[in-house]
Amino acid sequence: MKFLKKVFKRRTTWLIFGVIIAFIYFNNSSLLAQKRESQPFLLAHRGVAQTFTMKDIQNDTCTAERIYKPEHNFLENTIPSMKAAFENGADMVELDVHITKDNQFAVFHDWTIDCRTNGRGVTRDYTMTELKKLDVGYGYTADGGKTYPFRGKGVNLMPSLNEVMEHFPHQAFLIHVKSNDPEEGRQLAQYLSHFSKKRLENITVYGGDEPIDSLKKEMPNLKVMSKATMKACLIPYIATGWTGNVPNACENTELHIPEKIAPILWGWPNRFLNRMDNVNTRTIIVGGNGSEFSTGFDSIQDLKRLPNDYSGGIWTNRIDKIGNYYQKNEE
Image 1 (cartoon, rainbow, N blue to C red):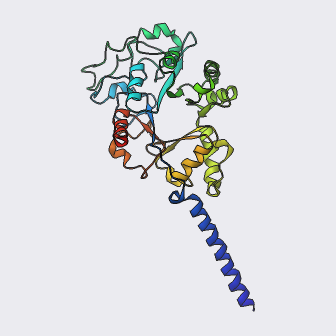
Image 2: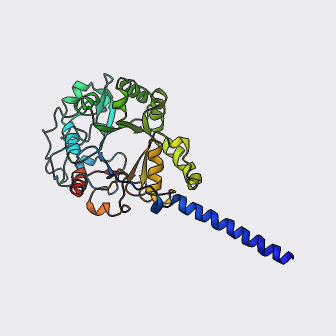
Image 3: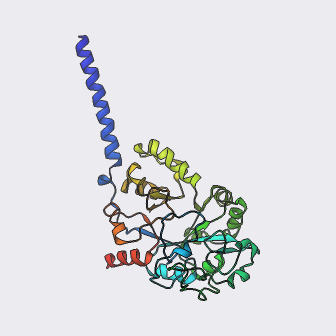
C-alpha cells in the first residue's frame, strides 16, 4: 500500500510538473501568438548620418575623425538629415539635445563642440544664435585629416529643438537628453508641455536616470526611457513574465532590447511585442549585447539576424539602406 502511494505521489508530481511546463510553453510560444501584420517600426539614429568604425570607441572618442568614406552629403542631427531619414522610410528619428546659454535646446550630439565644429567648449557657453554660426561639418575626415569633405558646408545647420518641431509638426521623434542634469529634464518638460496631447503621442524622451525622472514627474503621461525604467520593467518581467503578467513599470515607456538579450524574454518575439503593445510600450531591438555604442541593424545582412517576420522596432544607423529594403518589400 505504501509503495502504491509513493508511485501515485510521484506520478502526480510529474503530472503537475508537466502541466506547468505545458502552460509556460503555450502561454509564451510565438507560434500561437496573435498574428502581427505590420512592418517593423524603423528608428533612424541621428537621421541620415555619416557612419564610422566602432573599433576601440570610448565615450569621448571624436567619431567625426574616423568616418568611413562618405556615401552621401548629410550630417547628423540636422534638418536635411532628418528630412532624408523620413523620406527613406523612418517611422521615427532619434536626435540629441543640449541646453544653451539662453536656455534653448540645441540639437547636437557631442558633450563638447570641439570635435565636429570650429568652436571650443560646450553648448552652455553659447547662445543658440552663436551656435548657428559654427560649422558642424568642420571636423569630419575619412583619411586621418588629409581632407575634410564637409568643412565649410555646415554653417547654420545646427538646429534648435524648436526649429525641428516646427519643421516636422507631425513626425515622431526620440529625444535624447545628453546630460544627467535633472534640471534639464524639468526644462524639457516645460518646453514640451506647450504641445498638444496628439503631438506628444509622437514624442518619446530618453536619457540619464535623473533628468528622465524629473521630466516624468512633470509629465507622467509622456513616453520615456532610462536605465532605471528599463530595469524596473524587465527585471520583474523576466521573473514573472512566463505567467503573461506585465509589470506596471512596463506601461507607457520604451524598451531598447539588445539582440543578444531578447531571446531570454518570455514570449519573444511576438508574444512579448503584443504584451508591450497592450500597455502602450514601444519595443526597439538594438545590435549586440547592450555594451556596444549605438550598434544597430545597418545592412540587409544584419536584418537576417532578426526573427522571421519580425515586426517590432529596429534601431538603425543606415536608414538610407534599411528603409529602402522595407519599402521595396511593401511594393
